[in-house]
Length: 281
View 1 (cartoon, rainbow, N blue to C red):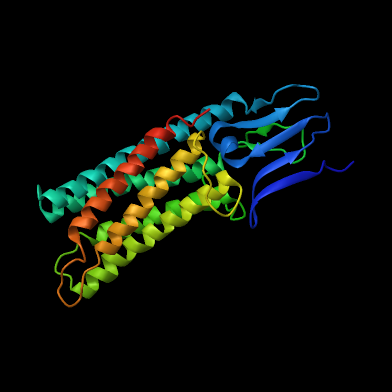
View 2 (view 1 turned 135 degrees about the vertical axis):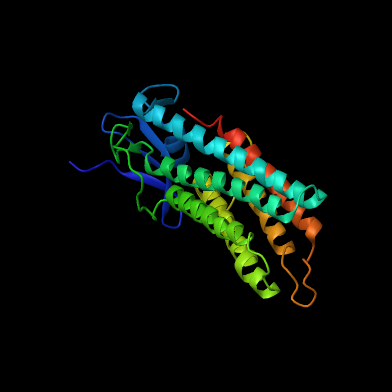
């Protein structure tokens, strides 16, 4: 006997919502973000007037809670440190080394948040294709390769972005660089990291909206988290562009804009991290 037919929604190769009729009747709906963040899948039993949420087992839910708490806290602290670093740079309350040190500490927390976000995807409960409508918790893994999933690719690109930022932050400690070296070793990785953050945010919208363009879902906490993070990524990109060093003058395009965009963008990441604490089983 074959598997029940599934109706898939998403964008391109990414299936972010599946709907099918289980063998016992009724309807089951798996959505990528609720399943991996809250460990739930929507099921309507035959004749039932409402949809109920079937939950993963307690071990799987406990795993999701721990990972979510670590990732959210890391982004809260990382964003706060970046905001402090931008404040030091803007108001001149410390030297360049102090500012770079605060940014670097914030970057370490972003690295942690990025990797734990990937672990959330890798170790999330999985649905049984065409089954009765339940989530199964598998063994712990430190890594997987699943580029056909929007959630995995988004988390991987985010983590890669934090690693590229780490290169930028390490290079910022170097002294005596020429303008060309500053733009190559510090500015270029900054722009690449910002671009990766923006791509990750777009994939986050794809996962929530089940299509290739953003949508508006004001009552969806997950949507707000992705939207606030994406705003932070846009502001980081503005900061990166404004921080380009002009070869002719050796000065930044707009140092004030770079600092303020970093401060407000980092504040967005902190806010998104606080919101993420609420998106748990």
